[in-house]
Length: 321
Image (cartoon, rainbow, N blue to C red; front, side, top):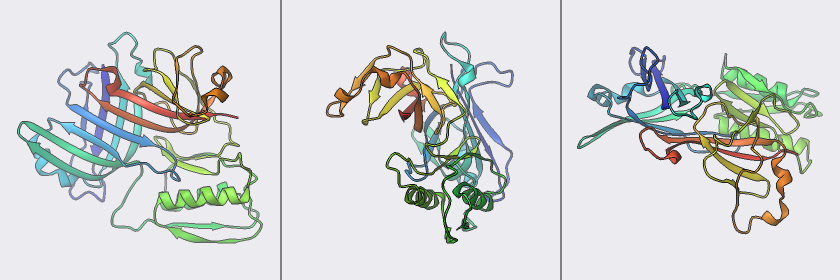
């Protein structure tokens, strides 16, 4: 059975205080709840220098009290878990888990005829609308860029874990007086551009920053990920598709354990689709014998739509040199 759990909790920025609310597909006894609400989900995970749209959640059939007081959920904390629970033959409950621990940026209710829904726009980080985000960046002479970025993120997001690593060769030759960045998108883009200026290797990806379910991730292609996930043929829905010269797109049953910056491997002999004019003649099967690095992840689903395409995780990954 398709699994989800959405927990909304108050914060200091919430309009009012309320008891935490959980919508989910499991009962308190951890059995499948056949009367679980219909949920529609569209959640991205990607690097801040290549931003995507905010996440979106729609819960249908909620009580009218939530519709009337939808604004109370603005800037509340939200945790979203997705995946599969026990039931179907190939369902793997171990792949279910947390995909976002963030903030409800906007909440509004809809009521038309017999259709009642609560719509949530979510962002993958803590957000306080009453405080201007302060990300002061200062890079000292002989300091690594990783150290400088960690200092900046620790100031703006106290207590949030910072994982991963940048190249140790990203060292500046003099003090760089910094700037105060007002959001993670501008900060992530500036760091990516700056790192490529320091290491002008055309094969260098640049320093990348992302939010994951376990905190911030620092990554560039000099860093070897500690996690590799082997995709099984029963995980994959449809063909793997080449979308760029060195990048594939894989659609799998919705799962939480694939995140940006990690390795994935695909089964040998899996069908591959080559779209027109994408230089497929220069790629051979050797590309599927190694690791691919995950570049972006998108979770898309409708919990009650019966076809297999309606509860999926879409992965873009590039060939690892």
